[in-house]
Image (tube, rainbow over all chains, first blue to last red; front, side, top):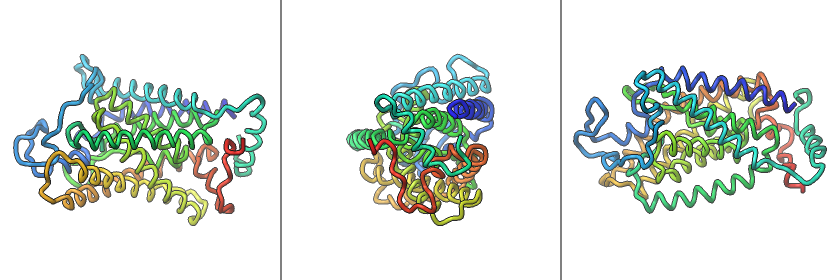
Length: 132
Length: 233
């Protein structure tokens, strides 16, 4: 069963990589719901910079870190498609490594011999016919 | 829905950072009961998948405005509320530290809205709906759609509450206007969130129903949830 779960995870990761690496280039570039609501009352230019008026976003400050992958691009890569694609792929892999790593370390590990009890309890919880 | 630096003042952001840290610690303690050798890699996948789909801003009916998945309902359905909240939090931390998306000083606020409020609202609805709706693909899809939609609106109102506490621009008492704008636009984004969540969960349920936490944990016949294994020891 464990092997099959890892197989599912591998296929899922592939889907995530395709979404972040390819489909992301066709995403809308308009401000999201929060950003647009915060700009209400201000006028903005073509780059989205505030030019006047009064709105909740007017005191917005720079990000403290920035970094080479800031704003979902890779610094130094001029090709926009490639830049977005690469940052998406790196983000998916990084998130998976951090997430799976943290959850793997946090997972339940009992004293010697808990596996049998775990398996039995797991079988109890599963609806008939869907086990492994 | 990531709050940038300077939108909410420092003290309020600090209080929410402490609150979020406490809540996430509680999620770790409760989530460990669910986290076994099978759920851990699945939770890593859910986090990576949410990161990917959050990049896909979709247009909504309001011109010039887009929305993206938050993922609280999706995570709650697939890996449960406690681990699910942690999944969304992992995504938000990576986005803030590496992708410059959402201020690092605003992380507590963003985690509160998207990881905690969104997931909690979604799971309350999931737990209720899955017990009353028929155990069919349609029942599961409706549950996913409704819980996802509502969770986005709840998260948006979390921001309005935070802005009321510590917004950096005086709205001249027009907080209701901000609340209405946020609710309206996030109702539309919520439709997108609902469609993505329902499609994804229905697909997983079709291929591997045993990997859908909500289907395992919420049995229609048993009103009391089966005690988690970890609690017995």
